[in-house]
Image (cartoon, rainbow, N blue to C red; front, side, top):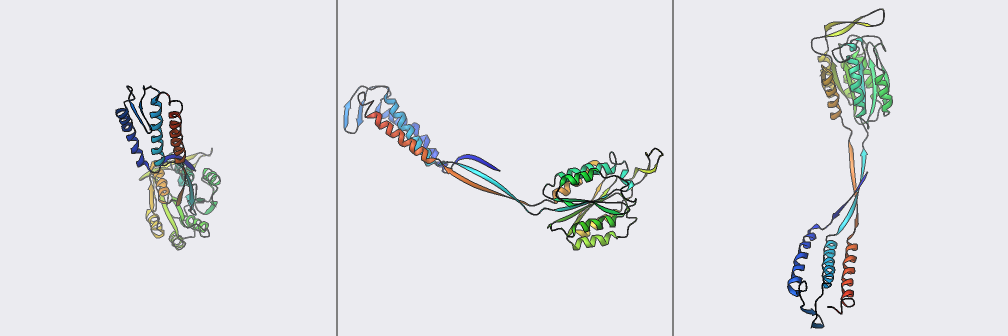
Length: 332
């Protein structure tokens, strides 16, 4: 990226341009050639001749030459600014997403899972310099997408998330453990897990706290998100013969104590998303907190233009002398 602009290296000299009108006035008062015939004080040629309005050209040339010299002293120049950015090794992020049946609850619009998918996709699009992976879990867990810089693959994986991909349940420890395994071998300086759930750890053979301790040892920070309103929400409780789900209001239960502990152990932070707006705000906050370092370097290339103004001044002065001793010799 580059940008070119014009400036003066010594702009203080431009104040001298204010003297030009004073010099013009001095010529006017001294020689009186603007109005009537006067005695000319030309070295070596002291005599009176009738004045002509053509002598004004000589004054204009002289004053313009003076202005050109002032501009030359101010050193006009153009400079080109080249900008180069250096992106340090980006952040590796794994989103561990709960896809249990309770994620179909309708306390978020249109339901928790669909609301999450929209926010997660926007989050990925805002991380152009980072690698992202997707882990899903319910009663068990697996890697939906390994850590990759190909955002199209990640976004397609997010859009394809649906209930029923894995055995139902809420194995928070297994979801976290799988995410840790995805990051333990990566070379990124910063490694982050965003663990989202709407329930209580009730299955799986990996203890969530143990998984958090391992994450800490590997330098992995975990942000935990509990998704669900306070009180009750319409949960799917049965399936009709036509395949549609039956919903019934039930208490919302999220193991916030566990999620806070996981975040505290790993140096992360716990969030509670009670509606669509809050869920969006949480991902935006995480996006602000985990920024990839980008250094910007600017290179300036200057091109001087004062020489042109010096030659203009010299040319005008020579033209004045040439006219004085040729064209105007007989009338001045």
